[in-house]
Image 1 (tube, helix red, strand yellow):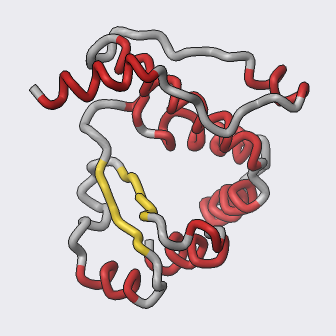
Image 2 (spheres, helix red, strand yellow):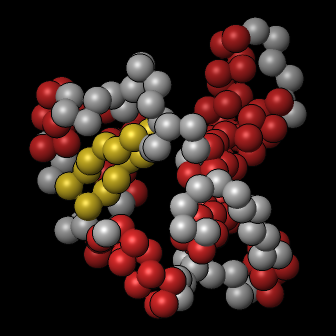
Length: 164
């Protein structure tokens, strides 16, 4: 987390967003870094950025952007390369990660945002279908958004529900 993730964030984070909080979401695996880990906090302090860790809600794969699309996509690309041993597999996965198409990342995040909106429409729970918006077609047309809008009435309804 410190040597790879923090380093990548520092190198690639846009200057105009330097004052904003950067959230690293991880699942609840016991092997992950705790949000109050002193080594992580010290490393973050040296970056000059506001970087924080949060855990995803348990048992919610649609709310985990990594499970939702990134890992599956990365895995399928890495499997197209022939790996004769574990070291080659690791190199192939790292190569696919470095070469990963940024447009694919945008599609995954749009799907995540769509799931958030669907959950809000239902007032919570997981009885929804993952929304589809023909992202590839919109991308070809040059009209694929980088974020989705939430209806003001829906937002206000959710905020009222959360306050009660």
